[in-house]
Length: 292
Image (cartoon, rainbow, N blue to C red):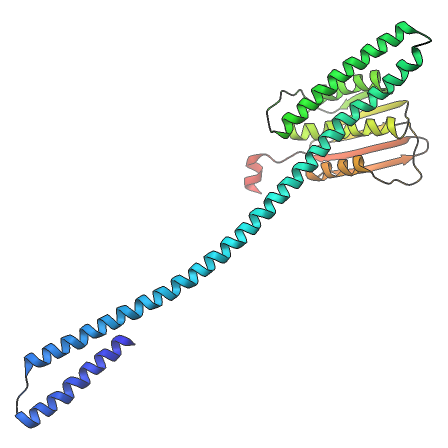
């Protein structure tokens, strides 16, 4: 619009002044018109540049204001993400402490009670029990170290899920005095380390609850592999509550299962006892994630 206005002014000036000069002097001063027209064009260009830079400045200020708003939102998001990460880390630490130290201390308590009762009746067996307690304490310290490494994301050497659950079965039978058996059905499938740890903790928590709350004498662990996933069933012959009120352990267990898109069911039967039944789908590979 500014350029069009300048052109119109230029045309009006030439027509008007040319008509006056021709009417009065019967001639036209080409040099004067050229200088005047050049000045008008120059003034138009300067005005256009000034208008352009003013508009650019307004746009820049608007963009700057939008950038500042985006920056503030990003800071808020970063703060919330940091708080969420800290909360998640606290939950993970609580899980590790509850699942490892709690499990070992439960077994240690049983051994200590047995050693105290045997101290006057069978000193030799009592001493052997105390030695078993020392082994259990060493194992507990190792579990704490592994938990600290896991919290710090340090790599640890782990065995397969079958071997880990087999060893856990032997330890629980020996230290908690709950006769525990382990059975595997189907063809084992390699699983991610984090998923193996989740399955291990679920079994560990289930056995601890079987002894601590159900006072079970026998327990059975069934690990079954299928084409689409694997399942765990931990059953014990302990007491069954009239109404199940999940505490920290069972809530923790449910959250672990949910993180892997699994399903969990608690079975309660006066004859069969208490059972924890968990189903996990196999996690998607990187290639499958891309296709999805």
